[in-house]
Image (cartoon, rainbow, N blue to C red; front, side):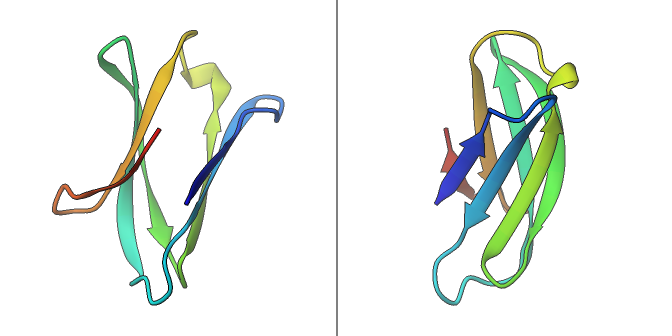
Length: 79
């Protein structure tokens, strides 16, 4: 499950909860706005959970699409 908290001042907080037995791995995090990548980072899933803070100052105004994917390009979550 993916949860995005937009109520914090100055940052978005993303939290990911994996399934039981979810392997530890590094995931890519990408935000797209108006068809252009506006933010990219990585996060590590450890024991099925991960979180990331994204500074709002790095994001343009408007609607964003967030995608989480692994090194093989498999998409795990999209919102």
